[in-house]
Length: 122
Image 1: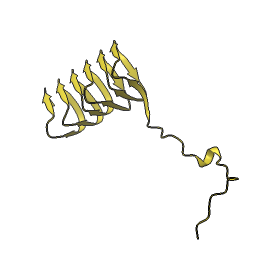
Image 2: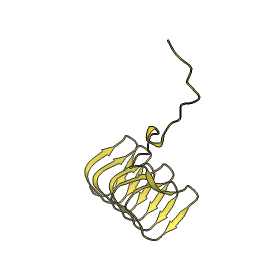
Image 3: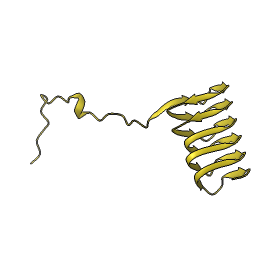
Image 4: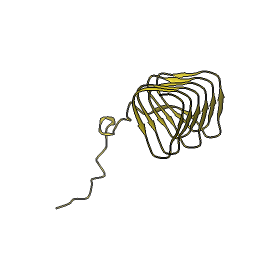
């Protein structure tokens, strides 16, 4: 019923799954501190600290323990860390239970998990 795979089988490049186009393009690592304006056309993942504007037309993810001290603009923002500044999401803003946002928010869709702290105007 089942056969052992033949060692003569070779996978071509088309048989191997290609990475998704929505993968993270820029990562600010946990030990990285960025100062200044930060602009990207791709997805951004923040694990460290950013002082200055953060802007992307795609997805911004701020992990628990990460901090942004500036205004933020993104297509979609998923916040689990801390932001001290205004947040503008063109589409969706997700605020997890570990998130702390001190500033005004502007978005089409807002999802807030229990435990999150929001201090500002929506």
